[in-house]
Amino acid sequence: MKKHLLLLGTLIISLAGCSATDEASSDTLDLIVAHNHTSLENPYAYGMNKFEKVLEDISGGKVQVTVHHGTLGENENELVEKLQMGAVDMVVASPGFMTAIGVPEVDMFSLLYLFDSFDHWEKNVTGEFGTLMKDLIATKTGNNFKVMDYWSSSVRDVYAKVPVYKPADLDGLSIRTQNSKVQQDLFSATGAVPTPVAWSELYQALQQNVVDGAENDYTNLMLKEHHKTTNGKYISETHHDFTTRLLLMNGNAYDKLSAEQQAWIEEAIDLATQEHLSKTFSMFEESKQQVIADGAVVIPFDEIDIAEFKALAIPIQDKFAADNEMEAYLELIRKTSN
Image (cartoon, rainbow, N blue to C red):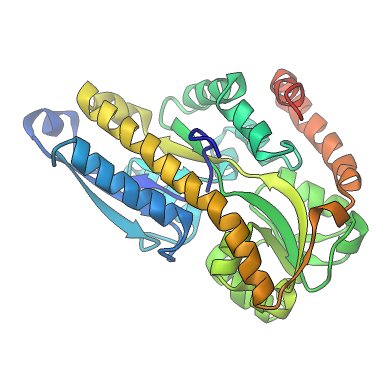
């Protein structure tokens, strides 16, 4: 995909203990970079490692980067809490967490069937819509959260103990969903029971029938081997969420950096994003073939009643936009639909 498709996981750059005075008097800036996945094969790991290499190279060693692969927390809320406390200064996270801190508008990114394809998603996050959302988030949070860029975690599908062809097939099933009301609203509309389960505990929940299924992208479910459980065997390509992940930094901390440091960080982010997205999209098909080889059953996109799913999703989109005075934002997205 194109270099500015910003897709999948959790990035943290820590400037903890590095005040504006410290920065002015020191030639070296130490950064901590982390994500919430333990697998080194996850696309986030490739992006993080690229960030480390590029930033240290272009700064001539004036910026030193330490990468943590899932060791600072496997759940995004843990990482976001560290950002809020000032223990770290940059994180890539799902947008839903921000609704709990007084920015409900950001849950627009969580609306299901909002985007039709990765190209449609890219047009919007790199265009007027993406810029407006960056400004809104900075304003609503007093610049405590600054969107440095948009990433993605590929496209999410339903996987469960039974195949899903239409919404009614989810009726009565407990499905682990993301922590977003608008997403849970859609699954509830199908008759499913949205069930909160921590990411690190999901394999066990599927294995022990705590939940009947879940939803995620091929690579993440493959790396965690969810498809090898009875309740993850059937993967239905509902393609309900072309995901957005927010690359966030404390904007006030960013503003204290020198122009040179800011330029180094932004260049490294750009190249890390390219690496991350390249892996994300190349691994989509690789991961799909792997789960099939492992015995999973895939119900292809063209066999799913997408129109019926969208019929449930559109009223949820409309209500969200009306409740949050974001009708113009929704129109921007819809008018660029394929």
